[in-house]
Amino acid sequence: MRALIFLFLTTLLSSYSAFGQDSTRVKFSISTNPTQYFFLDFPVIFEGYYHRHTIGLTISYRPSTLNSGEISSGKGPRLGEYIYQNYHNYLYNAVTLGLNSKYFLRKQDNVYLDGQIFYRYWWFDRKKASFENVEGGYSFDGTRTEKQNILGFKLLFGKTVEYKYGHKIRPIINMYVGIGLRYKTYLFETFDGVVNGSYYSYKKDNWSLWTPSLEFGITLGLGVDKI
Image 1 (tube, rainbow, N blue to C red):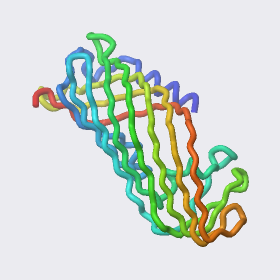
Image 2 (image 1 turned 45 degrees about the vertical axis):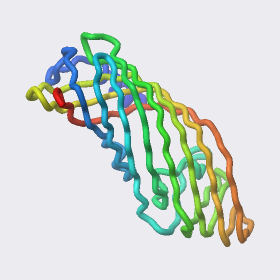
Image 3 (image 1 turned 180 degrees about the vertical axis):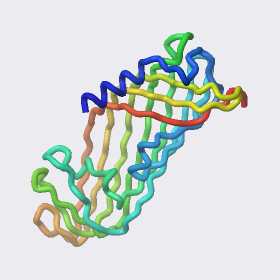
């Protein structure tokens, strides 16, 4: 993992030959984060460029692919907790809306700071589900309705790379690292089922928490020089 992060940072900050290094920037871009596709999440990012600033909108949808089933648990007492299994829980639907604004630090290149805020909603309704994690101490088996609301903030440091192909439309890459903070609220309802070894005809659990995060990734897209 350390080697991977080092390689990513080196790539992020290093010079490159196939891509332009001047300060000419596109006027508008549309991009996506391909790594999210592995989790059936499909984000689309629209971004307008204004001198050294951008304003962007992110829209994402992740469909449910199961109507019932067992949710697998991660390894370890922390990663095995149920609240960290969302992307591996295919009972869930999810939608995301986000806003961001980049500020390019220098005119000579495309290094930037990016502030982001997003809202994500996870849900499924009246699905037969089961989960057991001995290390995490939480289990259930019954009909479940679940809702999660997540408000997140990110501060990213990154670099935009534009491939100088043509004048109006250019392939564009964003590479970034940073930190994040999320506020999450949960509502879990169990109907005619067992929660932590006890039977309930109806049980309602809700709580909230803050979680920090380390962010790094890459987005791919197209930039338009003139709209």
